[in-house]
Length: 140
Image (cartoon, rainbow, N blue to C red; front, side, top):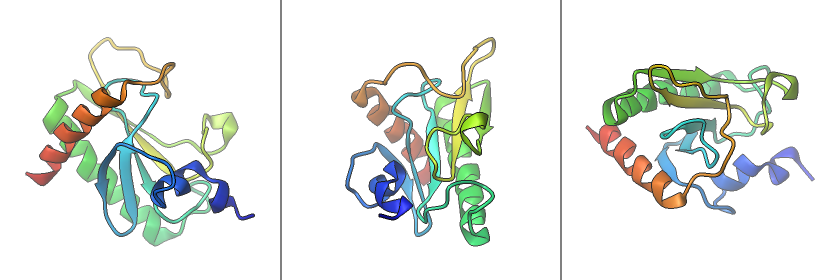
């Protein structure tokens, strides 16, 4: 069986498992992290399976970078954090928990200490409400 057949993010892209989606285009998908490091934590992924930065095709990498910028601007506008942490990990030793290229957008507040990943699952209704706010800012 192929890597993408078992990949949780590929299953989200194919609609086999649910996700709270924020944005989708031809090459990328953005959805809320179900175990957020802070409220508004979103993930931007390439729809094409690639385990990490070293293996992603350049057109997909570029598409993810453009989407990260657009979504980060929308997060800034809608949630007004003091800062944004943009993170991308390659390999388990670096903190990558899903072997599919993705970028974290984590809104941060002054003095907040947050890890790369949250410690507890978020409430789905809260994720949906945050996604609506970010989507509305994307539409402006």
